[in-house]
Picture 1 (cartoon, rainbow, N blue to C red):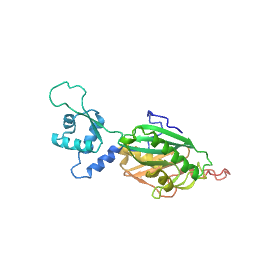
Picture 2 (spheres, rainbow, N blue to C red):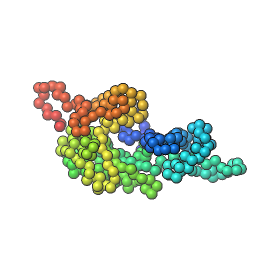
Picture 3 (cartoon, rainbow, N blue to C red):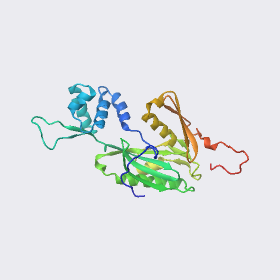
Picture 4 (spheres, helix red, strand yellow):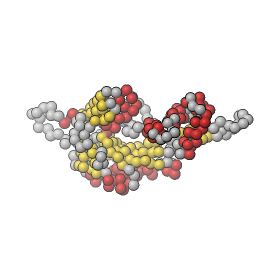
Length: 282
């Protein structure tokens, strides 16, 4: 279960990243703070054009130089942006300082399931994978097996963080199949592991000393797609999934609709052949 090192993301057919870029979160946070409504535009511009200068931001964001200077100073002070001075001065006068997003600032451990394997990745706030680890969980695994597995995976990735002194791990995001009680942080049930029942994450959180959150995997996927494609937030959107099982997730005007503890969109549990004697996995 050693980290596999850096992973290069490829096409959309691969396992989707199960976090949402924090640029949107930063935008909301700064917009709701008096006098900081332009900060998100500055951040996005720096992210889109690494090495851009303050003068470049004035032109790109159509802001006054004083406003740009004030916002950049705040972002540098918050360690969200780094300044890089030119090694060689090509012109006389004050050199133009290049600005870069500090991608190491905030990290998250994301744990999710692929078939009967539990996988974990350490990612930054721009969905870039730093390292990963995985472990196979047989179908007869119980609550204790899951607790030990999650703790081992997260501990492995935290130890693999190449810049622990310069970054903060905000928490552990657990995205899992089956029935989830996200309010009480309980994984109620998953058909592929019938001996795992009502897995409470309070003990896992206490062992790790890191905030742990849990959500249903299909809900996370739909939320991610709505961030990628804002048009999906208009009207009603249904995500239909046919893989290990058959299920779905539903949103109305950008808000996920579901049940805290009930079976929601679990189409695969509908009996098709009433004469079949084959038992359901649940």
